[in-house]
Amino acid sequence: MDTTVLRNRFRQQFGTSGDLYFSPGRINLIGEHTDYNGGFVFPGAVDKGIAVEIYRNGSRKVSLLALDQKDAPYVEFSLDDTDKPEQHWACYIFGVCKELEKRGVTLGGFNAAFTGDVPLGAGMSSSAALESAFAFALNTMFADGQVDKFELAKIGQATEHNYCGVKCGIMDQFASVFGREGCLIRLDCRSLEYEYFPFDPQGYKLVLVNSMVKHSLGNEYNERRESCEKAVALMNAQFGRVEALRDANYEMLDAVKKDLSEQDYRRARYVLDEKERVLAVCDALQAGDYELVGRKMYETHWGLSRDYTVSCPELDFLVETAQDCGVTGSRVMGGGFGGCTINLVRETVCDKFISKAKREYARKFSIIPEIYQVVIGDGSRKLQ
Ligand code: GLA
Figure (cartoon, protein in one colour):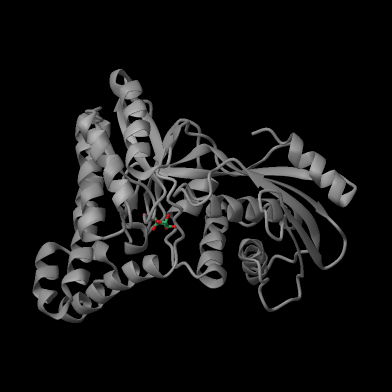
């Protein structure tokens, strides 16, 4: 990522230069809405993310410049403030400071500017990139890097929960912090055991198609989580030892079906289906069977659309278009409600797919979707 503009603006604003840090956004091959259900996910960091320049200012004041914000790009707060800032974007950084201090890190004031090349609201976790970039930078500057990477990911997640109103799982922050070039990460979201999976499917590409429908996760996302928790509570009361949907099976779920709304039942069933799909994809990846991986991706999409209800007409249309073009696998990625589809595409059909997706989507919705070729990159790091 080119940081020239960032450096110039930082110097203009603060009269010095600071250290540079970077954290990436992420993709996820499969395992959607499984993280907060104690399940498995298959994310990887991308080569796009958020870069932060930062400098200790010797006071208790935090001065922030968000280069990509049109409204209120400059915000100040004190580390002693108890109320979060009014600007939503600044709450991410305020939250990270508070969560670091909760874990015993003594922070000092700082000046920081940041910018990104990961599209906002596109389901690529720009917010996790922002949290991880600051968590990593502040940990390096004020705690000699003593907070471990697991905790850095949890700090980002806790920021979402406590300061941004999204009861997210751990996937995005984990992928941002732990990403490794060329590898997907198979992550057990309960134990946080993880394994790097080199991902270089010969003859295939991963392509993201941005519906340009901005998603913002909030109530709708939290409601999905509540549906899962209702099913868990009932099964736990009846069978015991069901702490999350990970511990449940179809028989248990059917046994409590009568006490659940149809909607909650279908959402919980989606999570059980997805659990099986993630395992099938692990085996398929090991066997190099990308056609099977692709079929599972489509199944995930329609499960997310019809049962979990986190898709939208635009995303469904993009997935149908992919299907028409013979794309191997396609589905909505991330929380849903807009953002990108992730597509596993044979190289031979890639050009045809991209041009058809652009053309047909523009014809139907009068928007030209952006296309990104996925490059799997490294996680949070210092740039100089
Ligand atoms: C968002 C959340 C993640 C995860 C996904 C859905 O990206 O931040 O924790 O739940 O949605 O898989």
